[in-house]
Each structure stands twice: as structure tokens, then as C-alpha cells.
Amino acid sequence: MNARPVGKKQGTGFKVDVSGFVQNHSPHSRLEEAAGLARAINLDVVHQEIIVLKNPRPSTLFGEGKIDELQSVIKEGDIGLVIVDHNLTPVQQRNLEKKWHLKVLDRTGLILEIFGERARTKEGRLQVELAHLEYQKSRLVRSWTHLERQRGGFGFLGGPGETQIEADRRQIRKRIENITRDIDRIRNTRELHRKARKKVPYPVVALVGYTNAGKSTLFNALTGARVMAQDMLFATLDPTMREVKLPSFGKFILSDTVGFISDLPTTLVAAFRATLEEVLEADILLHVRDISHEDTEAQKKDVLEVLHELGVETEMESSRIIEVWNKLDLLDEESRQVRFNALKMSKDQIVAISATTGEGLSDLLEHIKEVMSSSYSEISLNVAPEDGALLNWILEHTQLISRTVDHQTGFAIVVVRGSQKDRGQLENRLKGLRTSIIARRPASSGESG
Ligand SMILES: Nc1nc2c(ncn2[C@@H]2O[C@H](COP(=O)(O)OP(=O)(O)OP(=O)(O)O)[C@@H](O)[C@H]2O)c(=O)[nH]1
Ligand SMILES: [Mg+2]
Image (cartoon, rainbow, N blue to C red):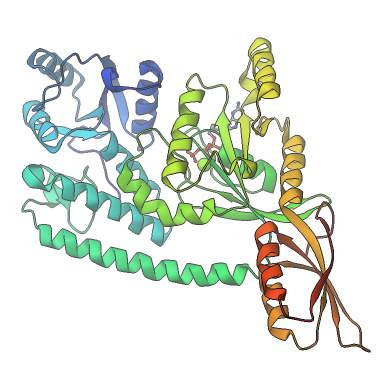
């Protein structure tokens, strides 16, 4: 499944950033990001430039002059692959490939390649393959012969030797069907596991954020784990979960996941939807931001957009979102002050930290605890002996703190920790029963189950 750079000159890269289409992100940093993406699959970037497009051509995107100019750069640099950091139509891609006699990848194609290399779990691989197939399907109309599909694989960068030239739409559709079925199967199994996990219903805290913001570094800092954290885009693809002990609160589960990026291909968002949705059901979302990045605001906007696409109402759910301003150590004194002033003025929940130096981490944990305490409470119940079914429900949905039985009455005193949602459901279930809630208090302390 690994895609390799094409041609003898493996690893030669060449990138163009079409600045005329860049929104919010500065052309310069967008170019740097694209180069980073290329390096993320071991491509050797030999030339990069920003091209201002005054009037994009439907057939080739660039004008004749520019195409010729780039042709000489290609010759000179012995370049084997051109990456256009912009979405190309199938026709544009094919025409550019014909003119330059090499492989051309657009932004979506490039991101798909990276995901293809990174996916580790079976589900992750299938999701990426599905996204790839959807992408190919949309390009099948006229340019299929240029796609040089690897037999049984899905990389665009496959060697021409193993290509299968003739398109077979039906075959692709069939493969999509099969993959979808496999993914469903895996998902059902996971759903069962998740239900089982619910029996120890610790609150879940999920890390979300732009790629390279420092999610995995923070994950490691908080859990003592060693998740791959690298100065590499999309270092993490598959979700990872781990327990964290919160002093005087108990445990919570921290989950690290794939980073977002601007113009994340919609096929990919769709493919990863189920995985991400699970993460997004978390009690708290930590939105990790690289506050030292010049495009940090644009990145935030991108992340909120993807969250929105995934069904998180960021405005209405602000109480469960904590913004984590990371990489504080990279700011000079002045920018630090500016940031801290902004932080104080903001009505959002924000904590400034450095995941590498550890600065602010205790504040962050404190804040997590506060948010949890306000949404979690300790509930003491007097459970009637005939309400065994209800007791089972309680034990499945909440976290048991203690349980004692009054042998004379047969009633059990059960103390649990539950979220607001659990509490609401519990109250509904009590109607008409002898079981009752006898006390409730914020879950600011208590031991872990
Ligand atoms: N100086 C500094 N560097 C940091 C900090 N946090 C993370 N980094 C660096 O930023 C880079 C990216 O960190 P990761 O933790 O891999 O970022 P990520 O958000 O998990 O990225 P993806 O998995 O690609 O989405 C690494 O080189 C980290 O060492 C920080 O607080 N300060
Ligand atoms: Mg990561």
C-alpha cells in the first residue's frame, strides 16, 4: 500500500503554491506547509515557488509561458514529481502531466498519499483506501490512464511497471462496497468494546487541533506515554487512548488523534468521520493550538470548520471546549504579554502552556478538573431491593464510588459519579420506583474507581 515517488529520480519534488487561491493563510506559510507535507512522505523538495494566478486556465491552470518556464526548471533539477498546492481538475492534472512528462499531484492527492503511509490500524487503512477510491472515481472520467493504479493498492505514486491502465469503474465501485462493509464490521466490533469500556465510565478528554500543533507532545506529557511526536505533518493518524490520573478527581481517558489541516479533503473527513465522531463524543475537547505559528488564527478557523463539519456546535458547546495555547516557550517576552492580555480578555476557556517545558500543565489539569466537576456530580442513591435492573443500568452508565447494603431493609446505598446526561436519564428512570436520590454534590473530589 505504500506509495513511492515515481521514476528513476526517486524523491525529487517540486512544488507550486497557487497563492491566488489561498485564503487566510499567508502564501509563504502555505508554501512552507506544502513543502512540509511533501517531506512527510520523504520527498526531496528541490524547488518551490509561489505563483500568482491572475487568470486560471480551465485546461492547464497555468498559462503557456509559466508552463514552459517550469519545464526548464524541471529539466534542470531532474525533477520527477510536481505538486500543485491547490485542487486540480482531472483534466488539468492530465494536461500538466502530458506537458511535463511526469507525475503531478494536487493537494488532495498529496494528503491522501501521506495518510496512506501513516495509517496503521486495519480500520485506518481501509478508511484511507476508501477516500482514495472516492477520489479516483471522481477522476475516472477522462484521465484514468494517467493514474497508473498499483495492482491491489491505491497509491498514485506507484511505478508504471505495475500499472493497470484500463479503467474499470465497476471494479472500483465493487471495491468501495467491500471496504465499506469491512469498515462497518470493524466498527461494530469496536462499538461492542466501547460499550464494555463504558462499564468503567471515566470521562473522556480528546485532543483536537491543527496538524503539528503539539497534540501528541501534550498527550505524552500528560500520560507519560511515548506516542510519536514529530515535527512532521500528520505524525498521528490512528486514535490512541490512555488513562490519566487527576489528583483529587480520579481518572480520565485522554485521547490523541489525527490533526486537521486547511482544505482537508472532504473524502478524508468522510472516511474518518466515524473515528472522529467517537472522539468528539468526549466530555471535554482540548483544542491544541500552536500559538507561535504565524497562521495560528487561520489554523483555528480551519479546525473549527472541520469540527463543525463533524457536527460539533462549537458555539453552543463552548463549555466542553478548552483552548490550549501551546508552544508558549517559542514566544518572545512581548508576544507573550500580548497573548496573556488577549487570554484575559477572552470569554473562552483558554489555558496557555508549553507541552515541551511543562509550563502551564498544572493549570491545564486544574482547568480540566473544574470543567469536569461542573458537568460531573456525585450522586447517592437509596436503591430498593426490587430495582435490580435499574441498579445494573446505574453501574453500566456511571462510575461507582461506593456501595453498601442495609441488611434490615434490603436497600442499597450506592454512591456514583455521573455526568449531567447520566443524571437526567437516571431521574427519568426513577419515576414510579421506590429507589430515590438522597444526595448530590459536585464531583470535585473522590477516589478513582
Ligand atoms: N518549542 C515547542 N515545540 C513543541 C511544543 N509542543 C510540540 N512541539 C513540537 O511540535 C512538533 C509537532 O508536535 P506533535 O506533538 O507531533 O504535533 P501533533 O499535533 O501531534 O501533530 P500531528 O500528529 O501531525 O497532527 C514536534 O516537533 C514537537 O516537538 C512546545 O510546547 N514547544
Ligand atoms: Mg500527533
